[in-house]
Length: 165
Image (cartoon, rainbow, N blue to C red; front, side):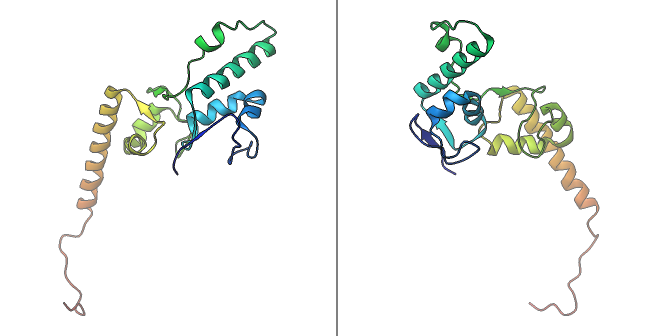
């Protein structure tokens, strides 16, 4: 699905806040919008609106903690989330087939899956060094899979008697 940039006055058309405006959600549950920015590929906000959501979260957190918010740090401490954070070997994957597993665990079990994530899931980013490790391990897994399949293949193939060109 093609990404859409939502504005504060736009109504969400997905999720548990479907039918509510982005601004209303920012007031009630800014964490949900921050999660959606990371996890929902079709959900985007302008940088300005991301800062508004970050400020809303900051103010809500201050109120819940009973401290006075400092307006100077509301935007500086909370940078916009336009670039997703890079996963490391110790990061936990929060979606998909291996949800709840660390990158290291999946790397040890199925590096081809991590390689597929790199090719198909925009929010799954890693350092160039880790990407090279994943691609190498995935290629080795694929080689082993093909080699095992060829070992188990029949020695020869004969066309059935009723086969006609």
